[in-house]
Length: 326
Image (cartoon, rainbow, N blue to C red):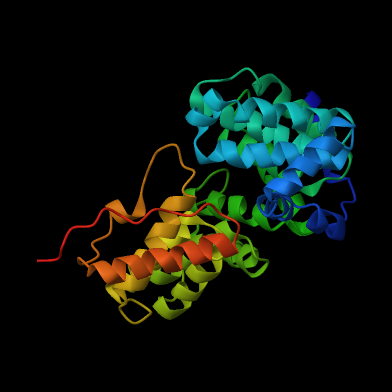
C-alpha cells in the first residue's frame, strides 16, 4: 500500500527539465571522467573539508573505476571508496549522490554483494522527493526488471517511466521501448517500441540510439535502412556505448550501410572492448571476422582507437595480439 501512495505522490511532482539536464547522470559522469590526477587531489582535499559537490564527484570517480572491473575494484577498495564518498554527499541531501549510491548498491549484486539492496528504494525516494528526474526513471526500471529487493510490478513501472519521459528524461524512453519490444506490462509491439527508441535517440540517449539502429538495420518494426542505422550506431558509439561501437565495427567489416573498411572495423572494435563494463565479458573483436591486417594497419587502428579514447577521457588500449596474415 505504501508504494501505491508513493506512486501517486511521484506522479504529481512538477519536475524541472533544465535541472535534470544540468545534473543528469551522463553529464556528471562526463565531468568525473574528465578529471585529471591534479583535479582529483584537489577534490579529495575539498571533500575532506565537507564540500558536498566534491564528495559527489570523488565518489563518482571511484565508481567509474569500479565499473571497469567489479571484482578487481572490490579487491582494490575502489567500490568501498565510491560508496563512502557518495554516502557523505547523499547524507547531506545531494539527490545525484543518492541516485548514484542506489546505482552502486544495485550493481554490487553482480559480485554477490546484496547488503545495499535494502536501502535502494529509500535512496531513490529521497532523490525523487527533491524532484531528481533520473531517480524516477531508475525506480521505474527497478519495478520493470525486479531484483535487489524489488518485485516486478508493471503497474508501478510504466506510469513512473511515462512520467519521466514526459518530463524530459531521455533514458526513460529506452525502458518504455524495451517494454513494448518484449511485451512487459503491455502488448508486444515492435513499431511502438521504435517510437519510444526514436524519441530517446533524438534526445541523445545512447542506449536508445543503439536500439533504434539495430531495428532500422534489420527492418524490425521499421523500414530497413542500413545507412541510417550506421549513423545512429555512430552517434551512440561516440557517447561511449560499447555495444554500438561493436555494431559499428561489424558494419564496417561487412560493408553494410558504409564502405568496407577493416581498419576502422578494428578501431571501433578496440574502442568497444576497452569500454566494455559488462561482467559477462562479451568482447567485440572475439566475435567479428576481421581479415588479418598487416602489422602497420593494426598499429594504425590501435593509434586511432587510443586517440579517440584519450579525447573522450577513457583509458587507452593495448594493440590486439598480432599474427602475420597468410
